[in-house]
Amino acid sequence: MTENVQDIETLVDDWLTLEEAARALNVSPNRVKQFIRDHKLLGVRSQGVLRIPAAFVANGAVVKGLPGTLTVLADCGFTTEEALRWLFTADDTLPGAPIEAIVANRGTEVRRRAQAMAL
Image 1: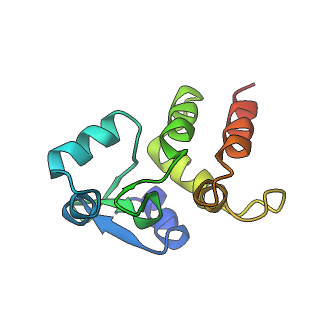
Image 2 (image 1 turned 135 degrees about the vertical axis):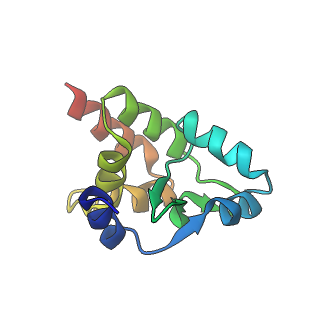
Image 3 (image 1 turned 90 degrees about the horizontal axis):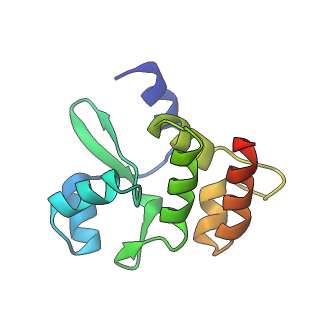
């Protein structure tokens, strides 16, 4: 495991394997991989296993607002690890971490902040 992934491990409390994410979303593992390629989800390899933060999936679907935020972060040049670190690091002005705001249906403000970082 790389150092970049190790610090993400401490930020993200709960992870899903590729297979668990596929079951939670009621799709095939290959479809989950496509979601990752399309910036609808993010995943990291840890000890040879692809894992997705459990916070990205709720009620059988990708959390509303997450794909748009991931696209903005990718367009800003964020790597997967940088995007995960940003999403799960607390921001007192939100309050909470950006992923918490997205889950609470406050994704517009999160995307606005992500876009501002690109300027």
